Amino acid sequence: LRVTEEERLAEIRREIQRVTEEIIGLTADRMRLSQEAGLIKETRGRPLEDIEVERRLKSAVRAKSVELGVDPDFAQRLLNILISRSVGVQRNVTSRGGTSPVSIYQQAKQLEKDGQNIIHLEVGEPDFPPPPQVIASLKKAVDEGHIGYSEPGGIEPLRRAVAEHLNDKFGIDLSKDEVLITPGARFALYLAASIFLRTGGGALIFEPAYPAYRRLVDIFEGRPNIIQATLEDDWTPDTSIVEDSISQRPDLMILNYPTNPTGKVLSDNTFTEILDQAAKKDVPVISDEVYRDYSFKTCPSILKYTDCRSIFISSFSKSYSMTGFRIGYAVASREDIERMTRIQSVSLTCIPEFIQRAAISALECEDELTANIGKIHQRTNYSLRLLEELPFICRKPDGGLYLFPKIDRPGFDGDKYATNLLEKQGVAVTPGSAFGDYQDYLRISLCQPEERLEEAFRRMRETL
Ligand SMILES: Cc1ncc(COP(=O)(O)O)c(C=O)c1O
Picture 1: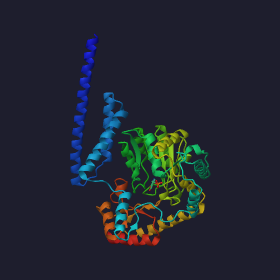
Picture 2 (picture 1 turned 45 degrees about the horizontal axis):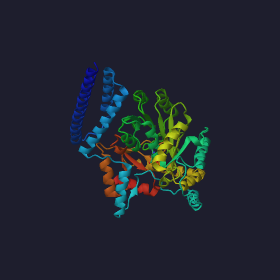
Picture 3 (picture 1 turned 45 degrees about the vertical axis):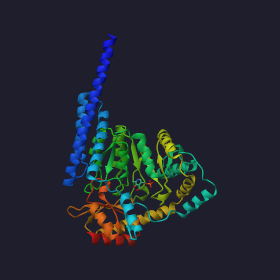
Picture 4 (picture 1 turned 180 degrees about the horizontal axis):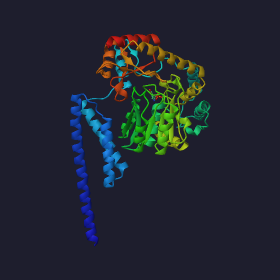
């Protein structure tokens, strides 16, 4: 009997190898089909990704996995990895790398080096200096010798100062142990994503969105579950689609209000409705609130919502014009802060202490912050008036540092226009395609004084 069992085991192993090779063969077939689809999309000028097609494929796979008794969660991850590979293959055959604010910025910087006078409206980097107290504290900290290694999660006085700052602002009761100091909001996003996203996982993202969210999901070979908002709906996402996407149990959901690029702030009701849905299905939420100081109306915060697992993210970059300091923070439960701190410790050891000491004094600069907000608000109104003379349709942002107008010209191609505008007129803006399927939009950053904005709009008109 033992011999026959041994024989059976050997037979099973041969069979497993055969099935596995079949899976690889089928994967090769799938890649070939993707490549061919990519070439057709290229010649027909179709976008690489189609949210509806992807949604249908996902539900078909879910139904099939249930029918065949395969764990639907596993089937979904496998599918996400396959789709993410297909998108990669199609990018290669179509050589569409995608535009991003950073790629336009690099191109603009190169032109500047070559002697061109460029107006930078492509990045969200405030043109005003950091508060003078911040620079003074930075120098003092270096002089006092705060130049060695420090705690991986941030120095205690800064974590305490951030907790107190938020407690005052929101009437909450955070402790320093619920705060993690990070090198900018961007790294906080990476840490937050890495504790929630598993390989092949899904992430619910509201577009138009900051391009880094998709790139984060790419790192984990996951797929974004995209909820698209439209200008016609006042950039408010359809909550019934949100409910449907949440029911598929993505690994996480990312919110960003005020939104980069639209400047949208959700109503309290919509914000709470979305969070209630996430709480019901235990989907963790990352709320990137780096622009909340630049809200021109009341902006709800995840910090006031306690029913779901969440990570609040903010930064010193935008509010205090400290982009090059690379300093931001995350607020979460002690357990999640510990998880993120372990990754930060392994990858970075710690953040320079003199920068953290400078950040403490930034939190005391209320007057400078109020002046910065006033300046951006004034430029927003000024630019909206200038836009009226162009065929641009723009909703007044509720906050943030940008305008995101739709260009009212049939067949307008934001990528071509942005390239032309940069090369011929020396004005750098980001095409809407960087933020999702928004080819006929442009993102215009308001981080330039009014005279420069006026000049840029004049050149934009000429290029149209
Ligand atoms: C929505 C959003 N989150 C995060 C960041 C990054 O901020 P930081 O400079 O703190 O990394 C940006 C920068 O443009 C952003 O637009």
